[in-house]
Length: 356
Ligand code: NAD
Ligand code: DAU
Image (tube, rainbow, N blue to C red):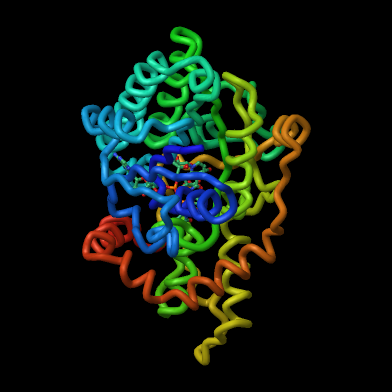
């Protein structure tokens, strides 16, 4: 079995690649453009495995994708490559449209042509799994029921609008051309190897460096947190057992306000790396809010739990502790990903916010 994974050097993609290469008799064809968010170090020993092949290819380049399909002849595709950071999409939306919408369109067209030319058994087996987000459903009020697979789309940010567009394309390619697809929409992931522009790693690293912990608005927005290993396990379930043309919501059954999350990070750090200056919470600062900031996300995971038998294994408390410990132990990885481009982004995003 050969699985083509796009975005396999990013946060979730690298976890998935490590699981597929490490635990399954499978060959992984890793297609990644190595943007600021992709890192070879994130796949560890897979780099030298005979069951891992890397193709440095941008999904915006259709000819390059055609060559990859022609040369490697994958059995299945898992599509994770995307621009993924909401704040960046607000500052500079264009690359989100290019990669998330046009890149997905390229992939669908190349996959369709390839699938059409397959012989019976291979054609039967082929599938494109599109990895998407709960943000396509928009925001919930405090008492609203959690998102189901039938919740209407109402994206708020350029990022979530671009992911919603890509989901629609995938569904249309299934309905119109019969391309075998499956879609999953997941809530907020956390864990090792997450790029430190996202809430949890940013807070861990700022805290240990004695820098302010910038909480948008009043920190009351709610996210549903899932440990990345659980997400990758869910993706494998969906790829193997999900119904053709079907959608699965994936979540952590773990709603927390941002302020609760930041306080939990501080409390763990107080234990693991006490600061002589005092508890890390003293560094929390409320800053200007994210424009269009969704108040709450929550996932109803009934479908994936009942149809596919998946449920999260990690609790937020144990997963967060592992995550904090990982960032304390992996300063070399952190330094390598925090390039000049990363430092420019921190200046752009937080320079304009000030304290509120
Ligand atoms: P990430 O930003 O950490 O990684 C994205 C990867 O895609 C990187 O390796 C990057 O180099 C690659 N990439 C970007 N543009 C590319 C292009 N044009 N061509 C080829 N490769 C390209 O993202 P992530 O957090 O790992 O998210 C992976 C996927 O999961 C995304 O589709 C995202 O929308 C979705 N998702 C993320 C979360 C989350 O909490 N992080 C939750 C639900 C869904
Ligand atoms: O819900 C799934 C989505 O989760 C994924 O589709 C996205 O790719 C992923 O980035 C994530 O989006 P969020 O915007 O929820 O994640 P982020 O880590 O950027 O922010 C989490 C919450 O924390 C959000 O409410 C904004 C807030 N925040 C974020 C940062 C970076 C802060 O308060 N301060 C910060 O400095």
